[in-house]
Length: 142
Image 1 (cartoon, rainbow, N blue to C red):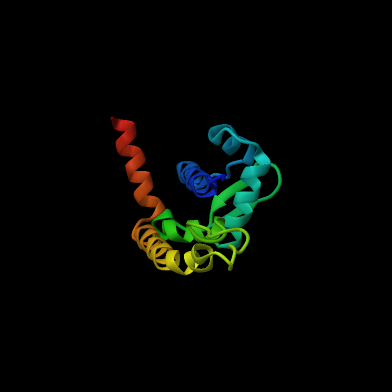
Image 2: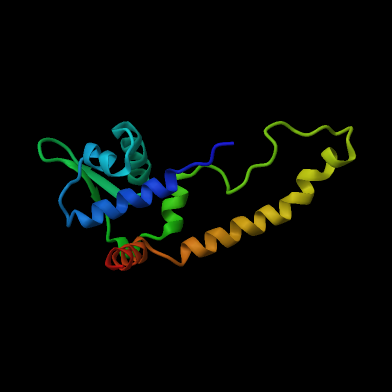
């Protein structure tokens, strides 16, 4: 089953916008850094804009911009802006109700899945994109 990379790409985008020092950054330039298609970047930028995290400037010299300082953007906000559903998904189709395992597996897993989702969201809510920028600077320094 494929795992979404939208969250990681969104954080990459926001880090690039922050490093742009207030100048608009094109989706083509971002796509080269992320190593993906500009259409993918535009789709994620659209999600981030709907969440009030990014904005855009149209026309010559236009591109994406941060809508507010990265110190005010939690990783949880970014996660919720670009990811659909929870961390884990249960069966795509309901399991067989004729099977004693199938009949109860989703209920048995529900508590653990909800706890894992809450733990993830708590961790992401305690960090901002500015924290990631600080970690990037540390890694770059070696």
